[in-house]
Image (tube, rainbow, N blue to C red; front, side):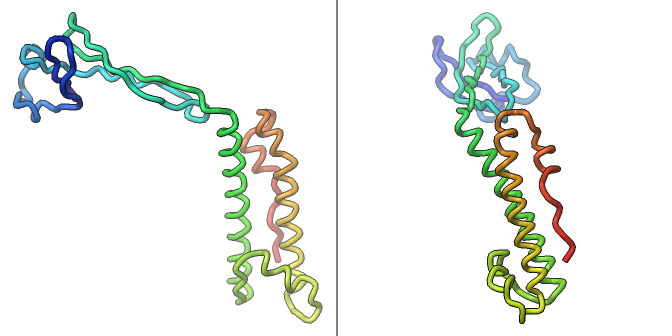
Length: 175
């Protein structure tokens, strides 16, 4: 429980505990308020974190109830920021998925490709024994990006859910 020190209608100190101002845990609220320590009523808003954020807070003294009411300002997140975040999340998902497939490929065949882009060097090399598999994975990764970019506008417009977006991505081939 937080308290504020109030003196002549002005808050002098914020975020105090009973211990910090020397009133025991068993003291009643009247004892606290008589000494100028008002209980803080924290009116935390319920927000949709996907489109809103808390911007700031303000305190108002209620002399009738001997409390301090803390209220918050809520603002809408700019659409450009929401879009940028969604795009970044989608890109991160694809990169992480591709990386995990490359890592599994490396483990299976005892190779050490840093990324799928290193496979491009070998995909057309007929003398490299894994060229077909490299080519298959590169084509899969390309189709992931094409599908993602094609469906991106639908997600941003709200006509496709995030789950539908993920379900539409091509499944990694078994190589």
